[in-house]
View (spheres, rainbow, N blue to C red):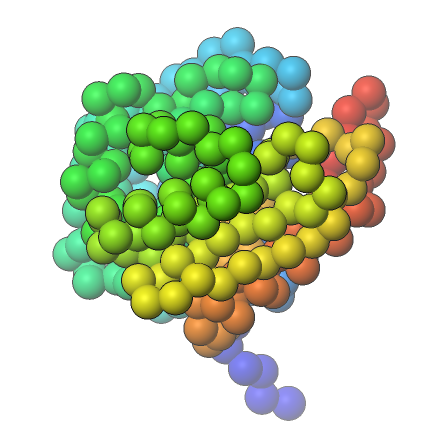
Length: 261
């Protein structure tokens, strides 16, 4: 029997010692979706679902070397970035993708952990905007991250649409603004503006389940589906179904919920 070559996906992100987010969540997601996962680790973190107690960033040159070794050996079909932390790492990562004219890149602009810990230094935000956003197939901020980039508050569903369009227009790249944390909403509605039109991705909010790593898992699923040959809208639609199921069937691990990936 002739085996079909596996689709290959790269995650460039931080390591989560709690196993629920970052590199760990990304690789679990890739495996669940039937693609081969590779990685370039940007930071080591000491964390659990409640808090981040320490961050050790790797040298930008070593992050770049990891990316180079992956591309040297594998035909990467999709990629995502997560926690990049410092401007030097952002610039090194952007250079690695820019030199290869790589376009199936999902940029998750990880800024703050759900516990409140800062995961992106202020000077790195400018580097992200200038160097990495222009390379993205889509940028996937949550509400808090979209507020930082848009410099306005998001309180209503109409604000999510306004933010998606404003950010896509300003950065000239598709933006998927994730509305799952909108207060008092019965639905988690994510809005994509691709530069021409809006697309909405809707799912019912799962009550009484607070999970860790949903953004990482969602962006990893989008990247995996891009690598499988789906277009952007279809990739997001499939990823939305995947993350909704992972939340709906979350596992109780100790005193916390973990996504069922």
